[in-house]
Image 1 (tube, rainbow, N blue to C red):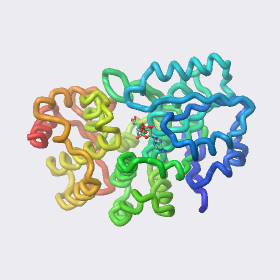
Image 2 (image 1 turned 90 degrees about the vertical axis):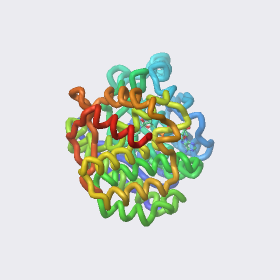
Image 3 (image 1 turned 90 degrees about the horizontal axis):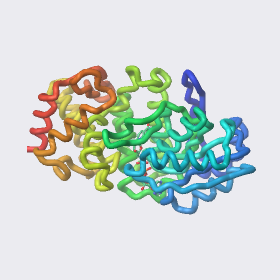
Image 4 (image 1 turned 60 degrees about the vertical axis):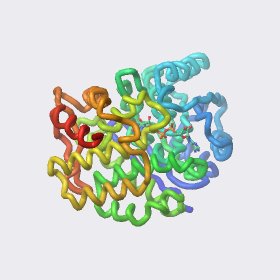
Length: 366
Ligand SMILES: NC(=O)c1ccc[n+]([C@@H]2O[C@H](COP(=O)([O-])OP(=O)(O)OC[C@H]3O[C@@H](n4cnc5c(N)ncnc54)[C@H](O)[C@@H]3O)[C@@H](O)[C@H]2O)c1
């Protein structure tokens, strides 16, 4: 099957994203054509990855000096201590800025390694090889890197575009269904904010995507990357338009932080719950029509994933609000929410009073 190549053009850097199957066979040529110097590289690999296709990729990275370290991916390990371990490794081996760091793993691995790469000697080359659906359709594109702290999620980080992204579809075969649904959540997010017609495609093809039907999954990944690429090319630093990519995330991040990043609710599941809240809130304030809201909620519910009431009670509302207030998009003491006017048409700069959001959460949890 054909390998797709997308070119992302930002102010500071242009880079390619390759999406396809059996990319390992072509990796040497890709590195050459993309002018990646592999003299010396540090490869940070998610510990949980199945050996094959992981070693197929690692073995096709022809570097004179190749150091491999393993990372245990979890939101709790998405912290400074993990970043320091990577930095220590780079300093010990005296990496220069011309050498490179390669992440092979999901969104957490990519975010942590990308962050370390962006601050090591003010920036070393970074190649991302995303291995989850979520990372292939979303986190590997756009250059946001970072870690969590006790104040919230992804609050420390940089904008650092990678030098190359390689999305090998074979990695997805070993992903548990739960993780596939999390990736699907971000495909859905991109589609909902950008393209009504593509939402109909998802309505028809959701099951084929989740079953990894070859042509359909590749198309879904590429479509999702194209939507994100177009947004970040216009607004790399999230001054305005890029905020749309946070649709559902103000709620989602507060769910994750309130639960102290438990594995019982992972990021994609929180995003699905967060998008559902954002859609219902949009309907409550009469921003979106009942028809569109119902269609979207039916689609999210068909994924049979987690429910707000599984995790929270009325007494948790204050904590949820506290984390929503910490969101990076807020400028005043109101809470900024990305809402929907209709499928494919988001509403960006809307701020809502804490009391209105509290009332909404009260109705959802009562
Ligand atoms: N930088 C961005 O723009 C951006 C965008 C969206 C999400 N994110 C971040 O991404 C993170 C979530 O990413 P994720 O869902 O990929 O999490 P993850 O990296 O933790 O991966 C999920 C799980 O799948 C395992 N795994 C990874 N690849 C596998 C494979 N091929 N087969 C079997 N198991 C595999 C991992 O070990 C982990 O247990 C969150 O921290 C979120 O904040 C960042």
